[in-house]
Each structure stands twice: as C-alpha cells, then as structure tokens.
Length: 342
Ligand SMILES: [Zn+2]
Image (cartoon, rainbow, N blue to C red):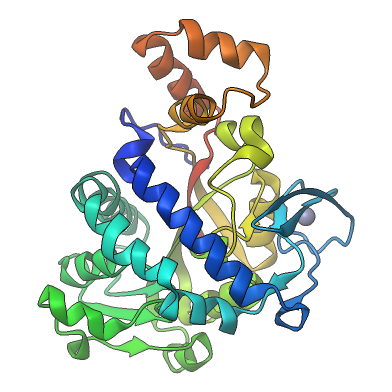
C-alpha cells in the first residue's frame, strides 16, 4: 500500500482564518440546534465503519453526543440526522451560505494552490498508472462551488459528472461555468443509470458528513467499472491533533463531521464494500499548528506534557520534522486514500 509524504508547510489560519472560522462555528451551531434538536429528526446508528453496536459516549458538540466505537475506535455522532436533512442544511442554512460566500472565498487562493491543484494532479497521476484508458470521472457530494468549478474546467478527463451536489449547481453560472453543459445528478439514487460506466470517482470530505455511508459507498461501487478508482479525503480520529485535542477539537461538529473514522475503521469500511486500498497516506502538515492554536485560544486545555514541551521549545525545524514523522507513520489527521474496485 502506497504512503505518500509531502514536503509542505503552512498555517491552519490560511484555510480557516480565526475570526471568520469562529463566526462560521457560531452560525453553524445556531443552525444545527434549530434544525436537528427535535428528536424526530434524529436516528440512532451503529458504528458506520464496522457496524458494531458497542460504544461509549465521549463528548458533545453543539449539544449533540458523539460515541466512540469500542471495536474499531471510530468516533461518530449518535443519534444523527438523516441525509435529506443534512442536504437541506447545506443548501439552505445561513452557515453553509457563509462558508461558501465568505470563508471559502477568502481562502480561495490558498485552497486552489494547496488543495484543488494537488487533488487534480493526484488523481491524474494515479489514473495514468492504474487505469490509463480512464475517460469518465464522477464527483460525489461536493459542498464547494469553487472546487466544482475547477473540477469541471480541468482537462484531465473527457466526461465529467457531478453527483448529489450539496450546493445549488446553478450558482456555478456566476463563475462563467455553464453547468447545464455537464451532467448533474441531484440524488445518489438517480445516478445508477451510469452503473459500471464510471472510471474514476471522487469523494472529498464526503464520508465525513454523510449519515448513510453504506448507501454512499454502495452507489460509488455500483457506478465504477471493474478496476475503477475512488479517491477519498477525510480526517481521521487516529491522527495527531484529534487524538491530542479530542473533545476540544474545533474540527469535529455536526453536520460537517458526523463521522470521524479511525484508520482501522476506514480499512474495515472499504474492505466491506469491495475495495482494495492502493494508497493510504496522511499528507497533513497542520497538526502541530492546530494544537498550538487551540492552546493559544484556551490555555486551560489539558495536553500531554511532551506535546506542551514541543510547542514551547520547538523551532520551525522541529515542527517540520515532527510533521514529517506523522506523515511517514500515517499519523496526521488529514487522510487521503485511493480505492480500487475489485
Ligand atoms: Zn467501529
């Protein structure tokens, strides 16, 4: 299994500027409390990774409980909203609109340079090696019009399909992208006409905020041709900053992160859905910076003494070496995975 280490440095605030991100969190909390507080809008779940019922409650965010699976260590919101409600949140809520129109826009340059372009290079390189005749690519559950614009405009694949977008696809018109010239499938269930016709699927940060992960992965598997590839990014609870910050992490909250899978959970999940994992990398470069920022905002957070010492005494070189160690050991919280349909 491939493990890619990326020599990259950066600051968490380049992607989530403090003041703007805090405003986003406040808006999201208000929306989510309004939208999901009624019990009839929530459903109990077993572990979405390994299906185990054994769990313990570990923390709450925005007043909603998260459980840790005692079998695979994944962490997940339980009970949780249904996917129709989550989609409605992304389409209509004030916080989702703020994310698209303010947070995403302010960080557009950095996102393009350090996230989108690297994604395109990544899936074009891997596809050339593993599936050189690939012509059709499908993108699942994008929440980000800026990314989808870049996706539709890049020239790597002949046919592109957008499936189950979590934003109003007509908004792309304002980017001078004629969305009507691309196939857009509004619901997962309607995508099966393309069964077996897709060479490459992308699910970036999609398994994080999808309640019925079984349905998402079954659909991706059904659409892919034999040997088809699926590219996934997510954050993992096995990663450094989430292990250290745990319930104090500002990365875990509904509905953006209702599933925070462990490495073991991810491996079990993809194996159960008929995929081989050909790459599992954690090319994150922000873990230590995220912990440092959390401590700066709240000095009462309990951290292991060793971590406090690194943060206090470490220089840039120590930070960089430590982050490289995390990547080599697959212990950063940012995960990218390539799956191959058996
Ligand atoms: Zn589990």
